[in-house]
Length: 593
Image (cartoon, rainbow, N blue to C red; front, side, top):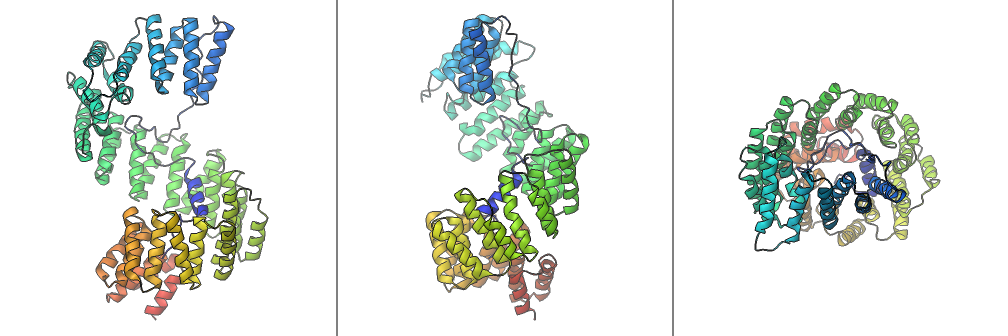
């Protein structure tokens, strides 16, 4: 069984740290659509003219500004409210109301809005806040929505409709303002009723769609259908509306990702400045492993704004996914010169590119150049692996022994790195000894148990491998990788094929698209004599991940079905990129000799 690279804590840490700095895809939130690739600038303290404030009031304003910068919104809201109350300042009252609303401090938001309205009677916003928050005092009674609350909201919307700006902003704020005060069905009914007098308002249809999608309509399929109908009406009135387009793509993407991608591609073509939509399109392409298309989206964004380095970073990251090392390296070198990226992110990518392209001495220097921190620690561990690639296993072990591992997690990672160093050198017995020592220190660490079981299996210690994997399953019963590993071991190394297959099936239900689990499903089918099913699963697995062991299994199934030429074609293709893989080599020698 191919070992899932995300299995160990070390591998998880590498994957997390590499992808964390500037995510190349974002989840679409209909209420707060992403500004893809553009990190929001921190909001500076909004200090109005404070020259007439007393020292005490001025202190409270400063306290609120500092608290807001630190994310302590509750403290900030209280400080602004007290300053506004004592200073009788409408600007501070407005700030207090908005911050309290964001902090979900309903009582304080109500008081601040009242103060704001009394200090600035012409302002519409405090009246909107008070009307919306009034719904909260009615609770969530099953009797329905309080008619007085509904009437007040209708008046606020009607008054807004008479202004130049119209009622759109109120409809867009409706779900956020009343969503916590009403149950989901009531919130949907309220949005639907309030929207009826405004059939040509795209924001009104958006509000109804959002309320339906949030659970106001059941079952889920009906909610998605209702939301999609409303959002399509909204777009018919305002076809360039990016927020609505993102919402539609989110709805379509749940069951029809290809249709969602086609819709977004059309929308982006018609609205080339729609960065968030372009980012969502790239996300869909990445999820579908359409890396060429995803890279093209980022390339267009970057071509349109060469100062937007986040788009260049997106092109570089996807180039790594495509194994286009030359392009990726050139871009990351350019990003490094520009000083772009979180601490060590670009440097770590450059080191990995040298690693992947076999320039191990250069990779060592690049890993050592990664700045101190979490990425720096992972880079230090990789230095030892590069030493092993250069045949300096003993030097690598000494290097690891000298690393300042402070935390338990770091000590475990050092043991794992040493074990992997020995495994790569085909010293399974040495790796086993290292892992057993680590287990004596941390007996219930699931990553160590898993790794030890994998090495034990290589040493034909099948009973020990099974016992270790069963312990992992006991500790993490819903871990698909543990279930898969145990099931595969039983299928491949024992006569208990049916028992192993049942475990693999459970893993498959938990992670239906995992290529390693698909491989195990295919191999179990092969062992059960179900060759057609085996081929189907293994082809899916190889499509998801070009792995030499998956290719070995698929080739063996094809060979058993008499399709020797197709089997040889798959094997030879994988041998070009993985000429030393022992499982692939053994399969080819055994069958094609």
